[in-house]
Length: 404
Image (cartoon, rainbow, N blue to C red; front, top):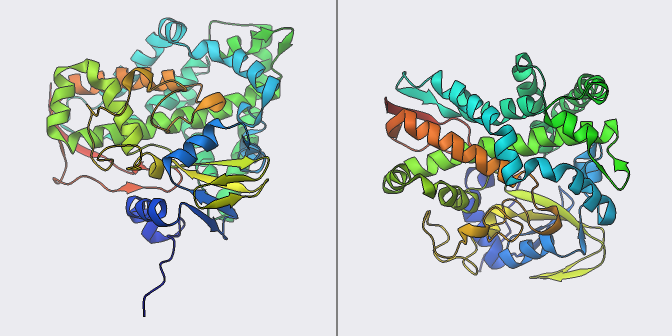
């Protein structure tokens, strides 16, 4: 008797330990599968996930229950003119020249301070000492908020990410996320109102003053955007730095190539976004019935798009399970635009507005780390395991190095 093949359960411990084997089975045998516990369809092939991110039939209405309870209503939920207007209000602060000239010194200072704290030690847990701190500290400083509140924001960030990654529905985690939302609102709203009265040279003042065709953002919309920035901007850079360093240390010849030629840092980052992306799944909701590989998704159903699976689809990438900084089928010239080959920042109208901020932080951070650390190796000799399902990276990255 032949055993019946069952689709992997994305909430199972086995999946959490090794999603990549499960991704392969899903792509090949179950490109469209219904997950009863999460009440969602799961898609895993590159062409399907790419379509879900680009085709207007796929909406972001799912964020009303997924994100709004902890952030408030954000730009991610908006469509049409409302979305384009709000994106135009916030996007200028995150474009290349404005970003580098206005916030470059803040980004460089924060990276340097964190690296200086361990550069002479010869060992570090890069997650605790650097990766989780750097992007959050940068966001706090960009907003013009007190540097003494860095630790407070780090705690809020951790709590909100716990809420967003709570796929199993743990009630305590959910309650902590809602408590954090209330604390964050009590903190931010008075400061937003104060900044409207006394604007400065910071991102919060820019958001308060931004106006297009007579439209500006309300206090609540600015607070929601800051909450979104804290998590979306923090989590991608936090886990990207961790995974990029882990990927390079696990491939010493590529690490040395990047050390010798720092212009390869964006290419290495792009390959990490493909091979071990910070965010492994994002949800969408079609406004009408839509046919994908494996069948039909009914209008209004949630669709979980497995970025981690799509980015390793051999229908799209050659040798997809191989980490290759110089891979030919990943166009580095558009890797941080809405036309990227990898799917880590989504695509189309909801492409991550902070992609260039993330790239700039990675370039600054990796240069500082490589300048401070020679002969980088894993403590104990083995690469650490990745952890997480919704977002994923090593939970600790214990490195030994020769101080430079």
